[in-house]
Length: 93
Image (cartoon, rainbow, N blue to C red):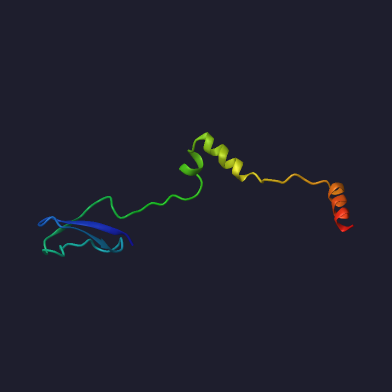
């Protein structure tokens, strides 16, 4: 359910009301019982998630290179099995 902003025509009191979109707009001010007007353009908060937004598409090329470098798997150099087995045999003696 959205939050709507209202303004009293008589005393100028601003307040918010939380009710469904199908409910009738409020008509009375809670402060002075005067008539109120619902203000337009409020009540919705947007949250952008997923691909197609700034963080994934519109970043600088330097950022994209750094991000790609962070994602590449870091592998350790392979050890020769011969040299490691020689070391193991020396330790055992």
